[in-house]
Amino acid sequence: MLAMFRRRSKKAGLPPGTLVHVGEKKTDKVKVTVTGYKEAEFGEREVETIEECFPFNQRWNVTWVNIDGIHQVEVVEKVGKHLGIHPLVLEDIVNAGHQPKMEDFEDYLFVIVKMISYDEEQNQIIPEQVSLLIGPNYVVTFQEREGDVFETLRERIRKGKGRIRKMNADYLAYAIIDTIVDHYFVVLEKLDDKIEGLEEELISNPSPETLHTIHAMKRELISLRRAVWPLRAAVNNLERGESPLIHESTAIYLKDVHDHTIHVIDTVEGFRDMVSGMMDVYLSSVSNKMNEVMKVLTIIATIFIPLTFIAGVYGMNFKYIPELEWPFGYPLSLLVMLAVGLAMVLYFRKKSWL
Image (cartoon, rainbow, N blue to C red; front, side, top):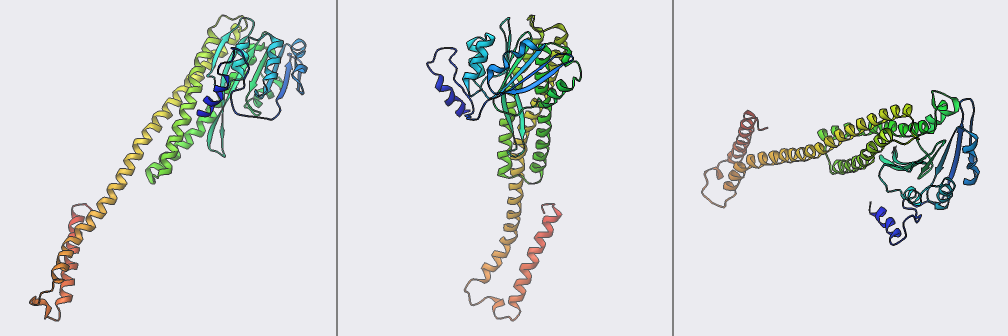
């Protein structure tokens, strides 16, 4: 978070609409993929320059331009210039710190969503900003890095499955957002398994590492909540807005996405409550463990108090102690000490203190 604020400071004092990349530093080449389709035709290819994709929205009924990488602001600027996009929108695209939102510019719609994935190696959630420009016959998506959750959607387009190749660009935008939201459930399943393992660890053997895991989980859920809560409003604005770019047939599907976002929010809130409760469980477990240790130490100390007294009496340097001159005095004192110790142990067991 602090790194994000430091990167934002580069924009201080610059005029509105100035394109400055705010996000993870990257030097790799931007990847541009163009997908165009009609009901009976389909085309897909990767282009070397952004200019190569501009004629595509004239050939196909729907054109999807996907750009992996927003660190090269000149690419975003060329797209904006060709499509007539407002400079403030382009500024938001290259700024990876925005929350999900939807803005209507009459000729096009601008939507920001958060795509999340789960890194198995780092065992954490990886968020990524995805920006969508939705026009009459095109959808342009901007991603922070290469790799996404859209492969199943691309397969549907390639094979003509379902109704996607019969519908307009607004349906493609719905399918992109729906795929992102559906992938939230995949990540939530991973978090559910992680929380279950954490609960078992809390009950069996809590440790300081467990506490660190709980704090990390809380941060992940806060990040996930920040990604989902505004998305509900953005999808609702798409569904209920009066833009002619969103047809009535697509609004029904957007309502389904809105319901899914509510389900995700409820699940995230439930996880947050569970993780917050884990902190109390951890403190209780540590306290109970400490009490058990103190209980054992107290019992041991209590047993040795009379034994220490007897040993202290016989450790005094007096000449006239009856047992000193008796051959069985030393064994008898040991037997008395053993009997006292056993008697105290039996008494503690009777009282269920042991």
